Image (cartoon, rainbow, N blue to C red; front, side, top):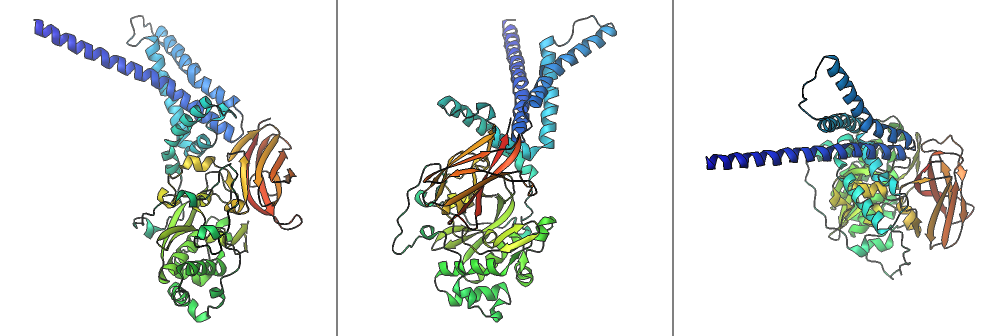
Length: 497
């Protein structure tokens, strides 16, 4: 008897522990699931400048309004049917389960409908409730919020398809590059960087970046007979140039010069053939064609090159970027990054304007990562690699911004909320002329609102928005006051008035 009582007591204790574990888990979920739903919906509201009222209203509806209405409706139906006996679950147990069911369905529907936007909004504006607070506690809370949002990256990956994921490269093993040394990664921080002293003979390519806009002499010397195939092009450069760095530069310039971007195909969301022989014959392609042709010519020239795919911040793209492709190349035993497509010119609607540059040739990795995010993090060449959430949050400045000796001091985010006025602070150590304006994103027919610029080493930009709404603040620079300005960055702005 004693042994049976002990076993019964032990079984009862285990049963109670399991019951309370289940109840505590259910209570935790009852709190966590509605909070997660409100956090996501409110972050989406802030991100799209829709205001918080509807998000708060939805949150209250999810809990406690709908669960209580369900309880009242259930009690009314039970009473109408004459039910008077004890119920299997008490009031709080029913509230927990109903809250979980209602909020689980709402959260699941929200994530199903907006998986990409949900992750992007959480990464960009998930700390909206902290406003501009920068204290120790605020930074700790911000770190927790962004850590949680980072764990939802799988939603983004499920929703995003890169059209430039070339079929034959899907299972192709890629080399494992070593990260670049800290002092060579480049800087995009808000701290002002000293002007580096140029050595008499720079042996490090990063010290010569960018290398100017002059077409490599070997490209001009190429006879028509050498342009019959990617292989013949590569063999010509291999025979002509012994220095692998010069060879890589010549191939970069050749592809950028000979190939025109197919802006019509981009506008129509169709993608022409990307195989190197076809791209060379048509003299036209999109980023996959540029990158595959560069890879093919480089390999034929005796260099080791790879095709890299991921997301990149296009001129009118969002903070998370769009599908894109570029290259890595191994020179002198080290890997470097380059994007021939973006060094070949620019598109405006269905028109492509050719303009050779080297902003994206052997770019310092941290600067390259300001607008390129590879699918495989090793190809950032950074240690530690930045996370996708960090990529979304970081300012949307182009490498040309940093090449011009500019440093963004504030704001330090890609997406900000204002009430009528945006202030941008720059360290302008090379004395560039700065022009800025506010415009409705992706709508070039709208009137642009010019910003006031105070030119000095510490440049201040003040943009006043004409009304509440969503805007993009564009930063453009020039070496001369009255000349052509090149836009090198933007900040997404919500005027919440």
